[in-house]
Amino acid sequence: MRVLAFDDDAAVGRLVVRVATLAGMEATAVTEAEAFGQSLRTDPPQLVVLDLQLGDTDGVEQLRLLAKQHYSGAVVLMSGFDARVLGTARALGQSLGLKVVGALEKPVRIAQLEQMLELVQSVGQSLSAERLQKAIANNELLLEFQPIVSRQPKALKKLEALVRWQHPVLGRVPPGDFLPMAESDTTTMDALTEWVVGAAVDAYQALAKLGISVPLAVNVSAQNLHDLSLPDRLEQRLRAGGMPARHLCLELTETAAFENAAHTMDILSRMRLKGMELSIDDFGTGYSSLKMLRQMPFSEIKIDRSFVSDATTSRDSRAIVKSIIDLAANMEMACVAEGVETEETADLLEQLGVRDLQGYLIARPMPVAAIPTWLAIWMQGGSVTPRDQT
Image (cartoon, rainbow, N blue to C red; front, side, top):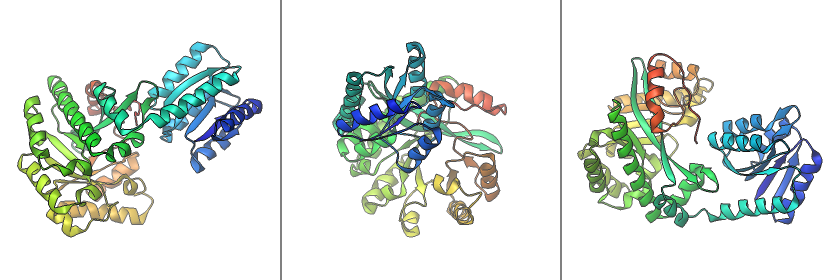
């Protein structure tokens, strides 16, 4: 485990490095914000030990930096300030989606630091498929929703359901830390997808009572496509929850969709026959052929954010985006651009012919309860950016 300590007191940094090294970790310390940012970019650590009082900057600013860079490792805070400030900073970090696992009051005692590092190591090792199944059973998971909209005319087109894990010790565990683990075990992935679909149906009903009735998108893994009964199980869950099949859009990556073509065609065709929509996610990043795309019953293409993000500056990305937009139009499929973060990008995409946009420019993922307020403000032309929970 790589540890990065940031404290403007070099002696404290050396202490953290020494204790971490004795615990079998690889540790470094910095005293300046520039060096901290550089270390995050070039060699991201699994653990950041961060002081709150840092001279020219402070720990709160650095927490925002970590959130902006989507840092997925653990964070331990330190401060000689009052314990309430330390507690508030910890809560702030967790609200930003960071994995703040502990806080240490200064002067730091070696025994406390050793215990904290041991906790981080043990908790990190405890993440497993079995632990995720326990999290599902213990209601530690939750859904947040990111809107997909058109701006001309202004309309909420869809909400993508994104699963989150609120670990009782680690706090918010980033999806990148547990989804690959779920993907490695078919039983776990089936249980996770079943929970997500069920939670999405419940959210649909909650929104319907508030007068908001739009389709919900749910991600499906290649691991879920092993079972030919999946379309029937999904249909039964939708019927039991009173959610129209046409209001469920299942998103699959192109790699997942084409792993076992014949088997996948069977399952996806039955999903479409039952009325569900199918979206091919992250399009352009896999190795599928256009022939296979033609054979699969997708109703929508999502342009991957890697092309969208630099479409305004890269001629190659712009050409790829335009090609995908034209491909979708010519195949009579809907098209969504994800990862839209600036007005310039949104304007370009609309000029190129895609109207459905998703990204931080529109809104960050939010709890279902926040959607009505966001929607009312957005429809009136305001800007709301709920905290990012990724």
